[in-house]
Length: 228
Image (cartoon, rainbow, N blue to C red; front, side):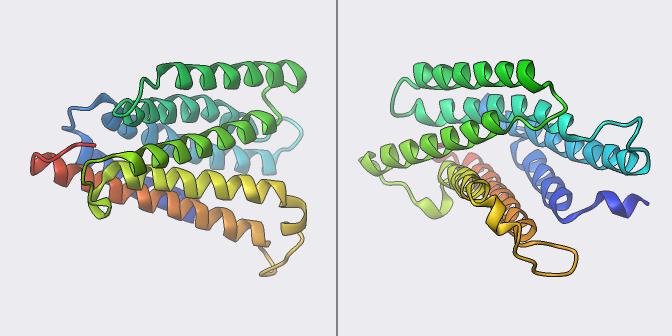
């Protein structure tokens, strides 16, 4: 049934994609506009992941689990998110060495994990390292923002809300992964453990912050204000 594809996660991702499309389609910044493509890739990946999971549950002998498609998504997450951070941090510093250095480390970890266990097992080391890296970039951005002598109304700052979404999501996911064993033992409902609700909440926070950031970006663009 088609309704099986519209889970809470896929729904918020599709809504965020729609908001991004209408708010950023005419944006002159390649970084902001790239969010449309990234969200499209994310939505398609999630839907394909659900489809492969259904096939796997129906035939575990001949069908691989869907973890490999999320391993592929890591490449896009690292690339597009780093591209946006580079754009935002370039207002304050030359971010190219930092961003490229971080991507190089992630690339090496990714290749090592592919070599060690292939693509059909979750790349835990790469995923965790990427999460920590994005948290550090978020904190560094907020540090630079704090030092900014110019007036920035945070309520309507697209960059602030975009980075806030990244910080909430990746810090929360890193903390949850560290304590996953204990959290996964907490039963909230007969069908779901505590980790299910934590990850869903983090997804909602991420895409809610991003949607608001895109709306702010559209508003600032149409009113010809500072686009950072």
